[in-house]
Each structure stands twice: as C-alpha cells, then as structure tokens.
Amino acid sequence: MTEQRHDRFERGTDGPKVIVAGIDGSESSMRAAAYAAGLARRQNAMLALVYVQPLMTAGAALGAPVADTTEEVAEGLVHEIRTAAERLKDIWNVRWEFHTFRGDPYNGLVTAADDLKADAVVVGASESAGHRFIGSVAVRLVKAGRWPVTVVP
Image 1 (cartoon, rainbow, N blue to C red):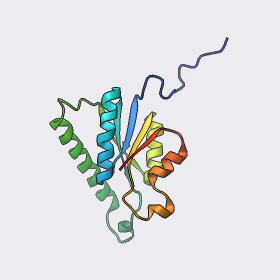
Image 2: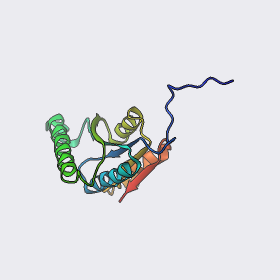
Image 3: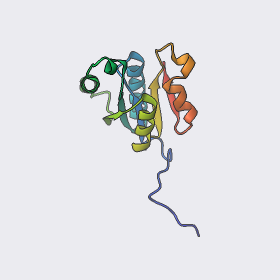
C-alpha cells in the first residue's frame, strides 16, 4: 500500500486552475492577456495577470526614479484591466488577480508561475529585435519546460 500525499501540488488534473499572463503594457502583452482571459473563461480558471517590475533600467543609471516609474506602470495596467473588466463584465466573466513581482521579466514570471502554482503561462511575442541574439522571455520560458507556454503574436 502506498501513502497518498494530499499536500502535493499536481498540475493539469482537471484542466487548468491558474493561468498566468505576463503583461508589461505592450500591445503583444495586452493581446496575450486577452487570449489568456478567453482561456480562463472557457476553463473556469483563475487568470493571474503578472507585471514584473524591473530592478534596474537604463533610466536608473541616469538618476531617474525607477521604483516610482514602475509603480506608475503597474497602477496604469491595473486601471486599464479594471476598466475593461467592468465594461465587459456581462460577457467576460473571468476571475482575475493582478500581481507584481520584481526582477527581470524571465525570472519574475518563473517566480510568479511557481508561487501561484500556474498550470499554464501566456506571454506576448517579443517586440525587440535584440532578442534574436540573446533570446526572448517567451523562448526562455518554453525552454524551461515547466509549464505549457503560449506565445501570442
């Protein structure tokens, strides 16, 4: 007889329970959030919208107040999401939460997906040409192989 462990987390047993969508205000990330909302609605899953606040940017080296700027971005994203959710509440019946994490986008999304026990991760395609050389967040998430990852163009 084997001992059953009820405290152990198991992904994907009855469909996704938590879908993490990474957002940063870009058009592709907002399309990813909309796509993830549709998945969450159809699967009756929680939609966790995640914004990763960078710790250091080029502006910080020039003396710009990075923490204030990223907080403003987070507040703007929450306002935009709440406005859309209110406007679409009759047809967009989705349970959602907004989370912020600090760090680089890849590690922030990995931490978010782990902490929130995500069953799937949805991100927008990179809009940066430099990612062809160093790899995009989406590619790194896929290569991690820890969750199903959907990349929305």
